[in-house]
Image 1 (spheres, helix red, strand yellow):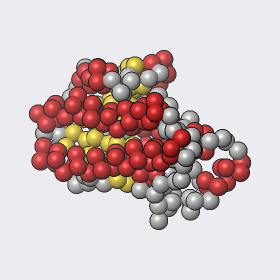
Image 2 (cartoon, helix red, strand yellow; image 1 turned 90 degrees about the vertical axis):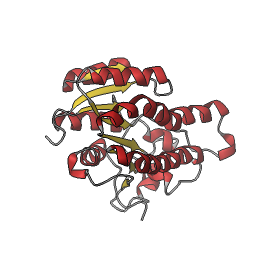
Image 3 (tube, helix red, strand yellow; image 1 turned 30 degrees about the vertical axis):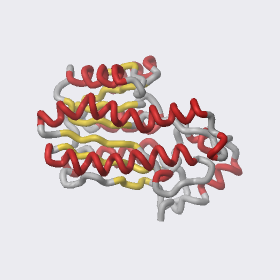
Length: 245
C-alpha cells in the first residue's frame, strides 16, 4: 500500500503498460483515473479497480484539463503518468507520411506540455507531486527505421530532466521509464509484422531474453511515484533487460 489514498491519473490507461500501471497503483492503494481515447475500455477497467474512467485525447488541452478535474473529485492530484503514445511501422525516415508525423508529435510530445499546463499550477500550490513519463529505450538506443518514434521519446527524456530541475524547488518530482519492446498492442506496430522470425530478431537484442510486460513497467512506476523514491528526480530508468548496455 505504498500509494495509499494518493490520487493518480494514467493516460492511455486502458491497455498495455497503462493498464498494468493502473492495476498496480490501485493494488497499492491509489485512487486511479484512467484517461483513454477508448472511453468504454477506460470505464470497464475503472469499474474493476474502483477508479474513474474518462475519455481523453491527449492531443487536446480540454481533454487533459477534464481528466485533471475528474481526479480532483477524488482528492488532491498527487501523481500524473504520461503513458499514452503512438508509434509507426518500421520504414525509411523519409517515407513517413506527414500526418502520421504530426500525430506522433501531438501525442508523444505536445501532450506532455499540455498536461503540464493542466496540472503543474495545482502541484506547485500544494508543494508536492510526482510526474512520470513513459519514454522508451528507443530514446537512448534507437533502432533503425523507427527514427521519428525514437526522436519523440528522446524529447520525452530531455523534457523529463528539464522539468525535474525546474520543478524540484516546488516539491515536484519528474521521472521517466524507458521500457524495452513489450507484450502490448503496440508491439506488432514496431515489428511491422508479428512473425516468429521478427520476434527472434527483437529478442536477440535483449540480454535477459524476453520482452517487457505491463507488470514490469508497473512495478518500476509504483516505486518511482512512491515516497520511497522521494530523493529521485530527473531519472530515465531503463526497464529493458539489459538492451541499452
